[in-house]
Length: 79
Image 1 (spheres, rainbow, N blue to C red):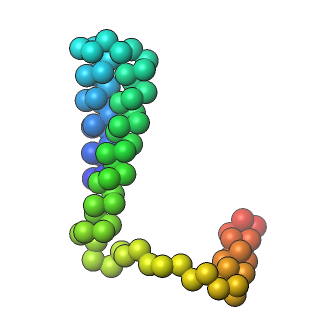
Image 2: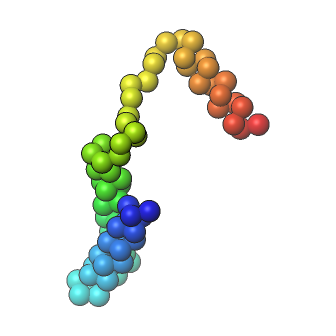
């Protein structure tokens, strides 16, 4: 929730900055949205890699059996 809030606030601030004082118009709004999403992504990665107690990325298993079971599970979710 905090990461989404950081992303939204930075989008609004950069949007105002790029559109009005710098006069970039629609290009400035697009840059602000992109920059806001990037800042939110970095905040999420910092949280997951640094502060989350049980959330840790792990290496994928690239065996044939593991991939087959993953494809099977995707099929269950889609149905």
